[in-house]
Image (cartoon, rainbow, N blue to C red):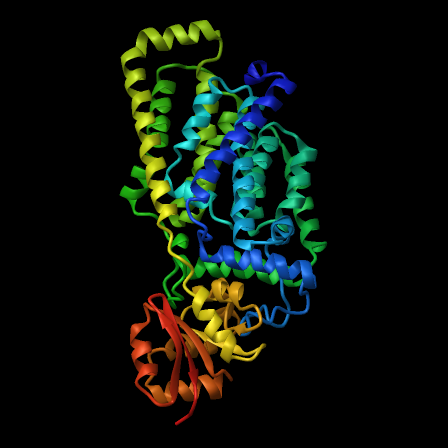
Length: 503
């Protein structure tokens, strides 16, 4: 239905290019409020890209995560993302990874606009605006220097090709996606969902795109540069991490992104989108317009992503643009048969006061969201271990194993001190999955008496050095009040220490 409203190719290209530049400027405005990298994982990704440039793929092991299943056989879950980062590893790496994130985020937002145009969506500028007020959490995720930004880009284009029955480009992205991020299973789930829906409602089998996508997906795993270790990594990242995050059992102290958002926060952060979903649903009930296939298929896909977001808020970066796309498709279907003049007349006469109030509300939401995001980025703290790593480097020999009180200290230490080795990198599940007993000893060490802590560090883990954030004040009092330890340096962010004797 909407293809007739699609702009000509050259016009859409220049519109997309202008939107890309505008989005790059907006993303830069937030990103460069501070010189610091917005999240700890960003320090890992840009440093890993530099090491990949200098040393290759580390197929035989990644010794920086010493007590992890990465040590004996490494697998990178996002090799394409790290390859894309390599040009940004020359010079100031913090600036480089922030610039790379700006360009990639701008490509995500402008791709959404292009997809609206390619599908002939009515009032696409407005629906693009709705995406831009997609909520603080969505914007934060899109500005983080992590591979999920590339993942959102690939998911949106995969979904576009799937909804339009474009088998070859869908299969091509199904091959590229597993080389880019572990969420590559999502387009395949969407394809199966589309097949099941059309089979149940229209007795029509769209199995060709399902088989092509799954075949390309499987082929990507087989030719993956880390095969067969990538299969184990995929299992650990998708099954083990999510199981530990949502199921009762051992508390690995995983990142908050793996849990659900509070309901009030969820609704409040995405209120404009929620109102559009409810309003368009109400309008559909009072206008018996047949919906296009793409809208009908997108509905269960959107529901799946909303359900996954209710389980883990790391799926919100997918749910927000897909739900916004559904609103745009549904509106276009409801407006089918109306010319631009008729559409403006109907909206103007019937809803002029409400429309004016709503546009003012959207503008106010934009202003509030901009102010909040600006303040968040401007208030980002300095790296916790930039100074402390220098004291560690001056005392600990190259190749020395360094204890950390928590798993999320290692990305910064890895960035500033790549000459040392650390216990676990990026996710504690990688250590627990490799050796649960060893993880328990590591996790409980900071609560031991001084003598036992010193013996465990030297005897069990084979290290004499450690670095901890300031939040672990109890352990600081333990190591600071016993002659078996020496504090090498400390500041308001944390402290580094050395074991100088055993009990």
